[in-house]
Length: 114
Length: 116
Image (cartoon, rainbow over all chains, first blue to last red; front, side, top):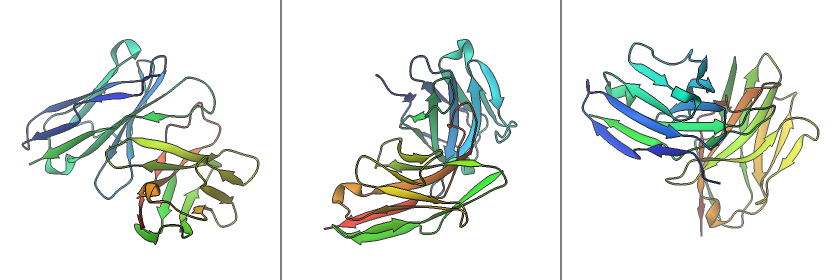
């Protein structure tokens, strides 16, 4: 079974530029999560999708971050404009529908804003 | 809301020595508890979890963790570590009874370094 796929693996941009990350979850997984992991910290949930609907985006900085999951499969996370403090690893995870289901994480995209 | 505190940011240990990685949590509701491991340049992998039942849970590679409700702790232990256990370990919690347990609150992480 293929795992959660993320691209690109690495990205370097200048502040005020825009950037997008892509995530393809495990086939059939209804729930998709985006986490932000700043160096030296644990991952922090940004947004949770159930199929193509948003379940929780309370910690997403909506003035600059946006995310979508069209057709309830893959997802994109966008930052526009980027700030220095957005430098982090962005992790995508997915889980099947149902009670007590484990989330599986991708390898992440490491973003450096200079 | 929940919070997680991992009491040690780095733990160096020699091969074949025992190790304990400490985790305390705070929550006003019942929670599920997890330990994840992150090897260099890899994604997070679930190591073990406590959902209910026996408070002592084990992983397939010799780690164990004990849920202590009175002390709100979920420390991770291994009696004899290997070089290959070198990684970053994250303690995490989620509210119990949810439809999935991917909505997690993580601790800051503990880097375990095993020396020969």
